[in-house]
Image 1: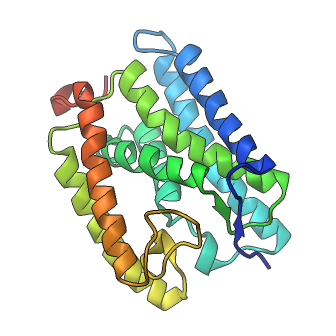
Image 2 (image 1 turned 180 degrees about the horizontal axis):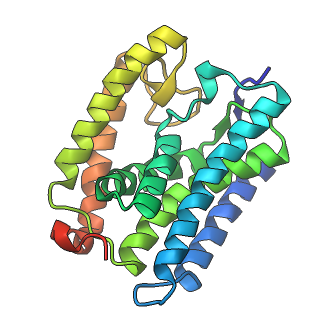
Length: 234
């Protein structure tokens, strides 16, 4: 039966995760196709399928090992959601999915890489899948903006905040039914993180304030990639 495994900063596995992230940054920004490349669309569709299959890989391993739990392993955490959103955008051309993924992925994924914790066995296949998944959601949205012509709509902040609040509220009900803690809206995540303070609902208010600020800061940093929606997905 799987339990929660925290990986402390400075451990061998933590450095492995940082290495995976750096390798993704190097590959996507030095070698991946850019706008104008004749095979860019085919590459993006293949990338979308690779992201989805990485999520399926985790589920398949858990089922084969007899460790799959509905209360822990549905793709209902923010980074798992983001992998599905990237698939919807890259393979099915859903622009709204990219808008949400662009804010959720880099901000949530980098937190997971810096303070990682697994609800799977702590073996190399699971650890590799975990860090690969989070490197995807951190790097791919930024790559798509900088090198593949994607643009965020001017209403991105309001849109993503609204979607986040609605999903968090729905997950409170789902968590109550399943006895789960998806997106950590029922109890604090078991990590040593300065933003996780107090019990319910204090920690949620801190995370909400921090998330709101980080979303806004992200849009300021990447303001040159905010533009008309009719040119958002070349």
